[in-house]
Picture: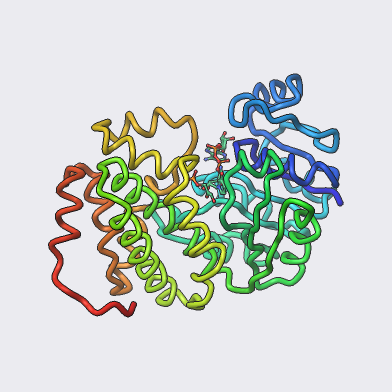
Length: 330
Ligand SMILES: NC(=O)C1=CN([C@@H]2O[C@H](COP(=O)(O)OP(=O)(O)OC[C@H]3O[C@@H](n4cnc5c(N)ncnc54)[C@H](O)[C@@H]3O)[C@@H](O)[C@H]2O)C=CC1
Ligand SMILES: O=C(CO)COP(=O)(O)O
């Protein structure tokens, strides 16, 4: 199979490595110097140091205006940009006749839209979907076992993702509930900031379990209001990715929370990562969209107050603990 991966950050590179063991993969980097550096080193030293590209992966650069032509010579296109780059990529690919899947997890800043809603605006004819679920790039690139979810209303997209990535170290589960999978991937990033903060303040394992469980309830409420199926949040992109990101120290979002607890400013925390932490960019959007829908999200709201500097870490915790009693059901 011929696969095009658009974006050579950590996750695009890891999936190129994974698929490149069995398929022909073109890994496209928008920065020509970065593309040349990856090709020369045989690895992506900027974003995924020490993990070699297999022979099936070739690296290419070029303008975004040329992406439609490049896509036409591949059977599956993977958009591996952060959320901030998805709209431009989908515009460039709007007439693409191939299945397209994006990897980014978030709501678009400013518009508050999920990936499938951006596609509806700019590329309605595109057969698109999301590949999501619990998956740290480093582990996938090392060939450690993972399970992901291929979400799309289009069977062609789901099938292409399974054909491309299902293999000895990776199981791909298909799901038609694209909104649910996207809400899970976006909200877990915000909640991982909260659990990072909780652990950084040494609040204990009880507190972390409470945040994860009540965070899952917030995610499920928002998803239901956006037309998602409740059972999706018990799956890989809901509970699965939430547990991974909220507890795993490889998570950049969790690390933001840990660094804020140490007393770093948000800017210092973000600068020290060297990678995108989508929760920082979409926390406001999650809370604003939830408010418009009348959905209560107190944990996400506390993360926003913290990121904006309205509350210090210990005040954010106190604000959550001082809420009145409520029934457990979502
Ligand atoms: N790293 C991981 O383990 C996983 C990441 N993801 C998601 O994948 C997306 C990408 O993450 P990473 O590759 O880890 O990020 P990264 O920070 O390692 O790399 C980001 C890449 O995107 C490029 N980029 C930055 N802004 C851009 C824009 N406006 N337009 C186009 N390209 C842009 C950068 O040049 C870089 O190549 C994020 O939404 C993340 O949540 C999903 C699953 C796992
Ligand atoms: O989405 C991820 C794992 O599934 C990666 O999480 P972070 O962006 O927090 O590192």
